[in-house]
Amino acid sequence: MNWERMTLPVLLAQWARTVDYLERQPVTTEEFVTEVLLRHEIAKRLQTQPVTRETRDLLAEIDEHFRTLTEEQTGCTLSPMVTDISGWTPVREWYAWRRPREA
Image (cartoon, rainbow, N blue to C red; front, side):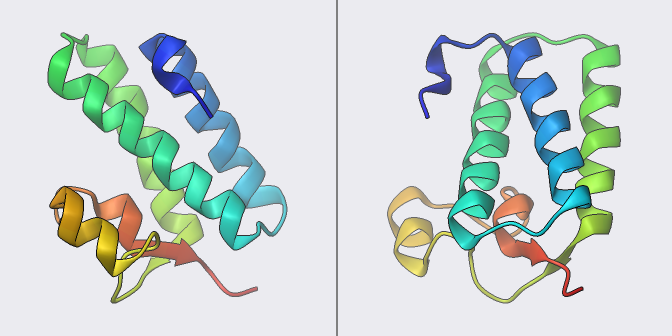
């Protein structure tokens, strides 16, 4: 998906819908990878754009809900190659080291 044309508020709304969807039904690995990439696009925007405290609080709330619906895993959801090429880490890109909880 091309998120580059979307504004940060639109991306946050999409992230909220995505987490809500994850709560209501199981997702495929492909869908989960798309969710991780959406969250990464938001992270990139936060590094380059000023945001309000309200926006940061909203994102923290959505992220916390995502954490309750997922569990940590030892490897990156995308692939070890992505972490090598892009320099992703489990601390900074925490969302990529999670998977949906087993039902």
